[in-house]
Image 1 (cartoon, helix red, strand yellow):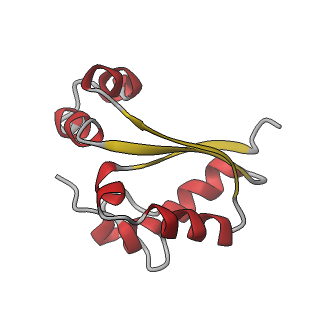
Image 2 (cartoon, helix red, strand yellow):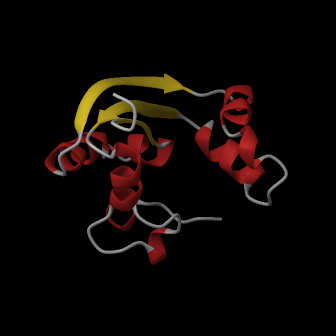
Image 3 (tube, one colour):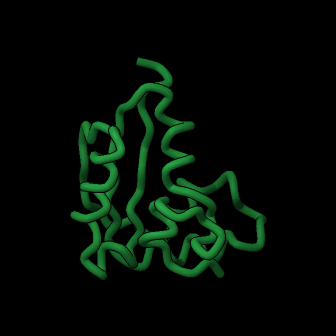
Length: 112
């Protein structure tokens, strides 16, 4: 099933603002299968480890702070060409630059 799975993380701001259900519905409506989902609290050390490829970049401290600021939802998604399809569906990193109809345009929070 290589190329058919991807990991998605719904950030704390979306959990706090009670958008998780709507986001998951949008994900399923876009043809992604949600194979598994789990809410968890990503502690600072866990966020640092998960995002270690970005260590040393200007945004790294902010990313760690945001991702460890509250609960996140982790989703395992399935779809043909899943990684590329997911990247297209979530949109540009900066929600202000994300195309209309993408998750980040619809639900995204500001980027520091």
